[in-house]
Image (cartoon, rainbow, N blue to C red; front, side, top):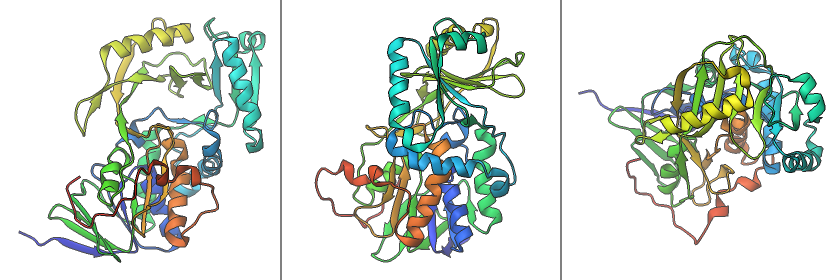
Length: 384
């Protein structure tokens, strides 16, 4: 039996989703050595099975500096990754189904005015003229013309490939079994295959990041959900915008091939590794889709899927330094927002690792907001 492979590096990263992979790419561009461990294939979890919306509209005000930074990165994908990932600034339209919804959209436009999102409110009359394909429940809405959509199955793995081309060592199918800290160096072990030592550690393990944090005495109240997605057969192209609904519900977009990608509702979590769509939720999603887009009345759903995403009670991520362990930085719990925000979160983590600070405001995402009482970090390792 071969002995365990041991590596030393400047920064170790747990998790090869869009956050961890973009952090690896940013760190390599800064000149730091990086080893990234991913339990499956990079970008195959929530980063690769999400809806593919790339929107700023509707994000919380605390997230807007981060989402604006991400918007600039998305505009440079071919330069950064060598692919555009089917990213298009198609516009994102948030539908109002009542006057109360319109009032809510008006308030959001006023509150977010400092961030120059370019939000445009559209009345019912204009909407009927411009979008005859919308169902009658829509009474208006808000358009963010420069928001858009992309293919997560292309974009998320592309960040890991770009990091690898830049010199990062990326180990897929390396589930982390043990993490420890001796006061100066982190030790990250994957079975009997790999042991990585580094003075800095980025916890970007998605829905599994809470277990990593817990090994250092931090227990954010993280929980998992399995958002449900579906895609129709190709239909004649009729819709450019990516759509959402004020107050929540169905969201959908049409890709160049004509398929409608839809999301809404919650799937079934089978175990820690697997999730799938649920039949009753699919039926509800189909009814909502036809109500919103009557052109889908006779379209067939050809595939459904689910993923596992990490959430925190306030629907805000944890992004920043550990409160117990110097050199440990967290980036997790993006509650469905990680695809758009992920590239900026990765850059912020890289800046924290190099400089101990970032110019992008992240105080609202500190793990300390979940403090109940002081906790001492555990130096003992345990399985995750």
